[in-house]
Image (cartoon, rainbow, N blue to C red):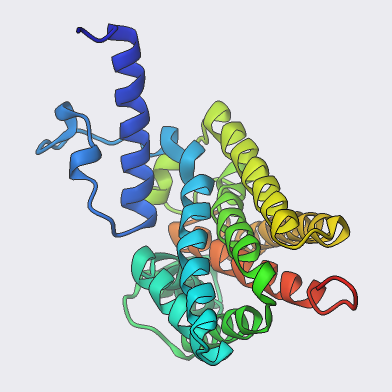
Length: 282
């Protein structure tokens, strides 16, 4: 049977966008996912058009880490050790891309002018500010994950990872690029329809995670508070990161986007871990 040409073209576009998102946000092999015209060629990938799927890929990354954390705790592994194991697996899956951005942006704080900060951030070496930022982010995430009750693990991991990949789209939506080159420059101007679809996908993913939490532990107030708290913290973190980037650099870079993702994930997990300690929620 022959495939409808328009349907085949649509499926190829979806495959290409998924390949772009997975190739950027993970270290998974994507060659088989690519449509034939993009294999073994130097064709430019439509990175900006693929951003609609980034939050969904983030949700999948969070689910992966959450399953590891849940299984480790069910196997009676100490909570902090299990949290570190889950974070390690997630970082390996993502290739440490966002963490590299956080370290570079933190090091850039040591510069006195936007030009000097951009030079520092482009340097492949990691300075003391970058090391401190990484240690604090990993420490806060590990402590938050370790303190989550078992019913909250999967919803919290999905929400945090999904919103982190949605939040990193906010800086390029409201700022100009700080450099005329670089991978992040491809996102400017941010295409409106994929951006709105990304926000909608993130909202649906968070809603799905909240419903999952309600099924696992049927206390609607806890799921509602977790969803609203996560959304509010993610939005505030993205806007504040964008403002800091504008003040420091005059725009966004790829490092800014990575820093935004890690900061959002960290603060969402801290928020969810704090809400989980409210008496009667769990």
